[in-house]
Length: 98
Image (cartoon, rainbow, N blue to C red; front, side, top):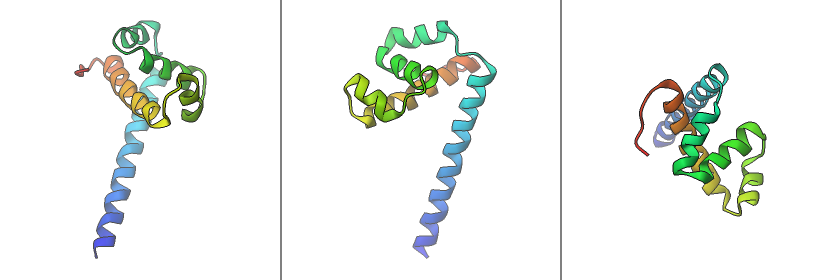
């Protein structure tokens, strides 16, 4: 019984994560990721801005970005997640604490 619960929980979390990723991708496609937004991100976190540039514009994998920045891939994943959330808020007019 517990196994079924955890399977359903995992499925739900996976669907939620996919929906968020799809929503962010849609915003990025509909609203051009402009230089101003990226410059604002870089003003308080240069590495996150670099991650966005390499991933979004350069098409690098997370592992490749980690190697370029000389950090662990988990750091890149955290930076990518935080930067996407910040940019989503910026591009949709929502405000987020940094």
